[in-house]
Amino acid sequence: MSIATLAAWLITASIGGYMLHTWIARGGLSHQRATGVGVPPPVVFGHAGVALTGLAVWACYVATRWVALAWLGVGLIGTAITLGICTVTMWTPYPVRVPSAEPEPAPAATALGGDLGNDLGSGEHAFTITDEMIAELLSDPFPAGRSPLPGRRRPEVHLLPLIPVCHGFAALATFMLATVTAASAR
Image (cartoon, rainbow, N blue to C red; front, side, top):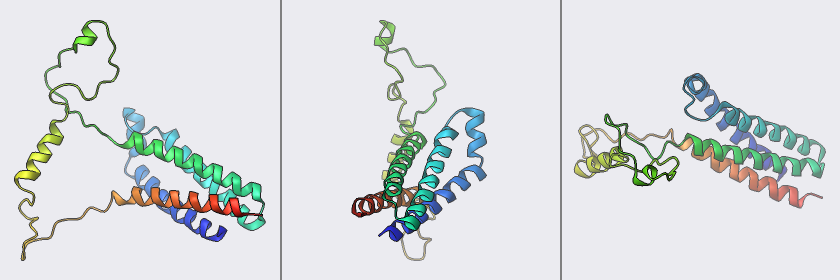
Protein backbone atom coordinates (compact mmCIF):
# COMPACT_ATOMS: atom_id res chain seq x y z
CA MET A 1 0.00 0.00 0.00
CA SER A 2 2.97 2.31 0.54
CA ILE A 3 3.82 2.06 -3.16
CA ALA A 4 0.22 2.97 -4.11
CA THR A 5 0.50 5.98 -1.80
CA LEU A 6 3.77 6.98 -3.43
CA ALA A 7 2.19 6.67 -6.90
CA ALA A 8 -0.82 8.75 -5.84
CA TRP A 9 1.50 11.35 -4.33
CA LEU A 10 3.53 11.51 -7.55
CA ILE A 11 0.35 12.02 -9.61
CA THR A 12 -0.82 14.74 -7.22
CA ALA A 13 2.58 16.45 -7.32
CA SER A 14 2.64 16.26 -11.13
CA ILE A 15 -0.72 17.99 -11.43
CA GLY A 16 0.34 20.56 -8.84
CA GLY A 17 3.63 21.15 -10.62
CA TYR A 18 1.76 21.75 -13.86
CA MET A 19 -0.51 24.30 -12.16
CA LEU A 20 2.42 26.06 -10.47
CA HIS A 21 4.35 26.21 -13.75
CA THR A 22 1.30 27.58 -15.58
CA TRP A 23 0.70 30.19 -12.85
CA ILE A 24 4.30 31.42 -13.02
CA ALA A 25 4.50 31.27 -16.85
CA ARG A 26 1.32 33.31 -17.26
CA GLY A 27 2.59 36.04 -14.96
CA GLY A 28 0.64 35.16 -11.81
CA LEU A 29 3.61 35.80 -9.56
CA SER A 30 4.51 39.17 -11.07
CA HIS A 31 0.83 40.21 -11.19
CA GLN A 32 0.35 39.39 -7.52
CA ARG A 33 3.50 41.26 -6.55
CA ALA A 34 2.53 44.31 -8.63
CA THR A 35 -1.10 44.55 -7.54
CA GLY A 36 -1.26 42.66 -4.25
CA VAL A 37 -4.39 40.92 -5.54
CA GLY A 38 -4.62 37.15 -5.46
CA VAL A 39 -2.87 34.45 -3.51
CA PRO A 40 0.29 35.58 -1.72
CA PRO A 41 3.37 33.79 -3.08
CA PRO A 42 4.36 32.43 0.36
CA VAL A 43 1.08 30.48 0.49
CA VAL A 44 1.54 29.04 -3.00
CA PHE A 45 5.22 28.19 -2.56
CA GLY A 46 4.62 27.00 1.02
CA HIS A 47 1.95 24.61 -0.26
CA ALA A 48 4.27 23.27 -2.96
CA GLY A 49 7.28 23.10 -0.63
CA VAL A 50 5.49 21.21 2.13
CA ALA A 51 3.96 18.80 -0.40
CA LEU A 52 7.33 18.05 -2.00
CA THR A 53 8.99 17.66 1.40
CA GLY A 54 6.25 15.21 2.35
CA LEU A 55 6.82 13.32 -0.89
CA ALA A 56 10.54 13.03 -0.11
CA VAL A 57 9.76 11.86 3.44
CA TRP A 58 7.31 9.28 2.09
CA ALA A 59 9.90 8.02 -0.40
CA CYS A 60 12.32 7.62 2.53
CA TYR A 61 9.62 5.70 4.41
CA VAL A 62 9.14 3.36 1.43
CA ALA A 63 12.89 2.73 1.35
CA THR A 64 13.43 2.30 5.11
CA ARG A 65 10.01 1.27 6.53
CA TRP A 66 10.50 3.53 9.57
CA VAL A 67 7.02 4.13 10.96
CA ALA A 68 7.97 7.58 12.27
CA LEU A 69 8.65 8.70 8.69
CA ALA A 70 5.21 7.46 7.62
CA TRP A 71 3.52 9.55 10.30
CA LEU A 72 5.71 12.54 9.46
CA GLY A 73 4.58 12.15 5.83
CA VAL A 74 0.94 12.08 6.94
CA GLY A 75 1.46 15.27 8.94
CA LEU A 76 3.18 16.98 6.02
CA ILE A 77 0.49 16.07 3.52
CA GLY A 78 -2.14 17.27 6.01
CA THR A 79 -0.31 20.59 6.21
CA ALA A 80 -0.03 20.75 2.42
CA ILE A 81 -3.76 20.09 2.06
CA THR A 82 -4.50 22.85 4.56
CA LEU A 83 -2.37 25.31 2.59
CA GLY A 84 -4.02 24.08 -0.63
CA ILE A 85 -7.46 24.82 0.79
CA CYS A 86 -6.21 28.29 1.74
CA THR A 87 -4.93 28.74 -1.81
CA VAL A 88 -8.26 27.76 -3.35
CA THR A 89 -10.19 29.92 -0.91
CA MET A 90 -8.05 32.99 -1.63
CA TRP A 91 -8.05 32.32 -5.37
CA THR A 92 -11.82 32.07 -5.76
CA PRO A 93 -13.13 35.54 -6.65
CA TYR A 94 -16.68 35.29 -5.30
CA PRO A 95 -18.87 37.19 -4.78
CA VAL A 96 -18.12 39.29 -7.82
CA ARG A 97 -18.68 42.96 -7.21
CA VAL A 98 -19.26 45.30 -10.12
CA PRO A 99 -17.52 48.65 -9.73
CA SER A 100 -20.00 51.47 -10.08
CA ALA A 101 -19.32 54.94 -11.48
CA GLU A 102 -21.10 56.63 -8.60
CA PRO A 103 -20.20 55.95 -4.98
CA GLU A 104 -22.74 54.02 -2.94
CA PRO A 105 -24.28 55.77 0.05
CA ALA A 106 -22.94 54.69 3.41
CA PRO A 107 -25.10 52.09 5.20
CA ALA A 108 -27.09 53.36 8.18
CA ALA A 109 -25.05 51.35 10.70
CA THR A 110 -21.81 52.91 9.46
CA ALA A 111 -23.31 56.39 9.64
CA LEU A 112 -24.31 55.70 13.25
CA GLY A 113 -20.82 54.60 14.18
CA GLY A 114 -21.21 50.83 13.68
CA ASP A 115 -18.59 48.83 11.81
CA LEU A 116 -19.86 46.47 9.17
CA GLY A 117 -16.38 45.32 8.16
CA ASN A 118 -15.76 44.24 4.58
CA ASP A 119 -19.33 44.23 3.27
CA LEU A 120 -19.08 42.63 -0.18
CA GLY A 121 -22.76 41.90 -0.53
CA SER A 122 -24.27 45.34 0.05
CA GLY A 123 -25.63 47.64 -2.57
CA GLU A 124 -28.03 47.08 -5.43
CA HIS A 125 -25.23 46.48 -7.96
CA ALA A 126 -23.35 43.87 -5.93
CA PHE A 127 -24.42 40.90 -8.03
CA THR A 128 -25.24 42.52 -11.36
CA ILE A 129 -22.88 40.29 -13.33
CA THR A 130 -24.45 37.14 -11.92
CA ASP A 131 -27.99 38.40 -12.57
CA GLU A 132 -27.12 39.39 -16.14
CA MET A 133 -25.50 36.01 -16.80
CA ILE A 134 -28.55 34.13 -15.49
CA ALA A 135 -30.94 36.29 -17.53
CA GLU A 136 -28.84 35.76 -20.67
CA LEU A 137 -28.75 32.00 -20.18
CA LEU A 138 -32.50 31.85 -19.61
CA SER A 139 -33.24 33.92 -22.72
CA ASP A 140 -30.83 32.09 -25.06
CA PRO A 141 -29.20 28.98 -23.56
CA PHE A 142 -27.43 28.16 -26.86
CA PRO A 143 -26.07 31.36 -28.43
CA ALA A 144 -25.33 31.47 -32.16
CA GLY A 145 -22.64 28.99 -33.10
CA ARG A 146 -23.17 26.85 -30.01
CA SER A 147 -26.43 25.11 -30.77
CA PRO A 148 -26.66 21.36 -30.14
CA LEU A 149 -28.82 20.97 -33.27
CA PRO A 150 -27.57 18.70 -36.09
CA GLY A 151 -25.30 20.44 -38.56
CA ARG A 152 -24.29 23.07 -36.05
CA ARG A 153 -21.11 23.38 -34.07
CA ARG A 154 -21.09 21.51 -30.76
CA PRO A 155 -20.81 23.47 -27.54
CA GLU A 156 -17.26 24.03 -26.34
CA VAL A 157 -16.32 22.13 -23.24
CA HIS A 158 -13.85 23.87 -20.98
CA LEU A 159 -11.87 21.29 -19.02
CA LEU A 160 -9.33 23.64 -17.41
CA PRO A 161 -11.36 23.99 -14.17
CA LEU A 162 -11.09 20.22 -13.75
CA ILE A 163 -7.32 20.40 -13.26
CA PRO A 164 -7.46 21.85 -9.71
CA VAL A 165 -10.43 19.62 -8.90
CA CYS A 166 -8.45 16.52 -9.94
CA HIS A 167 -5.46 17.81 -7.94
CA GLY A 168 -7.64 18.21 -4.84
CA PHE A 169 -9.22 14.76 -5.12
CA ALA A 170 -5.82 13.18 -5.76
CA ALA A 171 -4.46 14.93 -2.65
CA LEU A 172 -7.34 13.62 -0.53
CA ALA A 173 -6.86 10.10 -1.89
CA THR A 174 -3.13 10.35 -1.13
CA PHE A 175 -3.86 11.53 2.40
CA MET A 176 -6.25 8.65 3.02
CA LEU A 177 -3.82 6.09 1.58
CA ALA A 178 -0.95 7.53 3.65
CA THR A 179 -3.01 7.49 6.84
CA VAL A 180 -4.15 3.89 6.35
CA THR A 181 -0.61 2.82 5.46
CA ALA A 182 0.90 4.55 8.50
CA ALA A 183 -1.77 3.13 10.80
CA SER A 184 -1.21 -0.40 9.54
CA ALA A 185 2.60 -0.19 9.60
CA ARG A 186 4.39 -2.38 12.11
